[in-house]
Amino acid sequence: MSRHAVLRWWPLVGIAAMVVLGLVVGKGSTPLDDWFLHYRVDHPWVWFLLHFTDRRLVVAGYLVAIAVVCVQRRWRLAAVTALTPVVAVTAERVLKRLFGREKVGALAYPSGHVTVSLVVLALLVIAAGAATWMFVVATVVLLAGLVGQACTYHYFTDTVGAVLLGTSLMCLAALAAGLDRCQPRCDPDHSGG
Image (tube, rainbow, N blue to C red):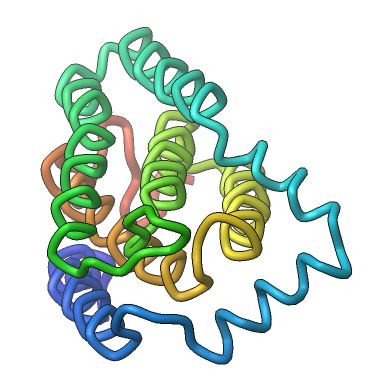
């Protein structure tokens, strides 16, 4: 399957999987969720991992991503970079109301912290030219934040739903930004030497 096909089909698959997961887990905890919650009792350091999804860090990453693509004069990507996190926040808030799953009195599914963190990290990877080092850093940061949320304020399945939602939104963002096509100065068949 080509990258273009993945970008086009993943939003449908990812959103469908997120809805199915939300319906399957229902309003309560699952055994997997319970494992993560019990893990925090023996490992209090997981609270440190919440720093990776802290609102201030995410907003700083968001502003850096916008600044970088503006400096690069990639205006269409700048617009998509500015709008995608807003769409992510709106989507997760609407979905939380639809699913109605609560944890400690707050709506939980899908996790907004993980959804928006994933979107901002993906936008930073794109702004950095999809460099391998940036992808690795973003993956580590996202996984750390995901574990932190899964062991504290959210159920693990909330974070899985958030990953499905966030990756779906990023595929749509890539399509909207025109990143599914050959970029300027690109050598798609590697014939340029």
